[in-house]
Image 1: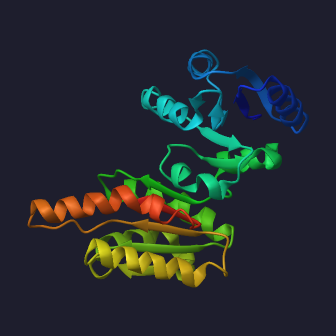
Image 2: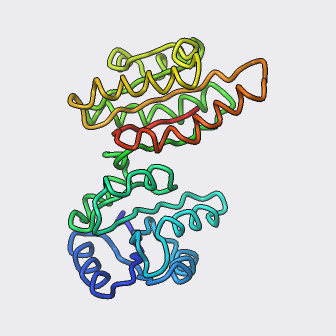
Length: 255
């Protein structure tokens, strides 16, 4: 099926040029918008597969729009790709903590780039940190397996950091592919927020030259004591890990 796109930008010249480019490359541009309010209305009306929004919308923010789209999705998946004339490195901290599929510079915008985001072939850029809520072994496997297999098919490093029960579930789900995945014990990795951060920093730095991306399926071992200070430290870790590792490139599924 042809992906249906909504373009959001305050430049009519860009909207015209991007529409011609993407439609010429096989995507369907179903509408355009120049403000956040107009974009929200068009998304409700047209239900596009992806919204491609400029980071700078005149006096508005494309980052704010991405949050608004996520908040009004009523549980449905809202796919937003951010774009700008500025480089990704200039905006990495904000991109990492915004609920968007990713970012593409305007001079690299193409139908293939958008398809990559939608099909998860490249899994975006920078650091992505997503939650996987599960209540059974089957749900853990169903949520993590496609993510891991897509990484393996792209030649990316895949790391699983779970307790023994979770590791066994994913090893069984992977079958022969489990030999291509690195497994680590969550109790060892998550001794403290500082230890976990240092572990990730070293792991990513050691593999930065070897692969386009590292994919991680992990679950923090939360303190059993429920000490307020300990819980607060892990919450700060969860809130800050995406921006701290924005140089990545890394994709996390946090189970």
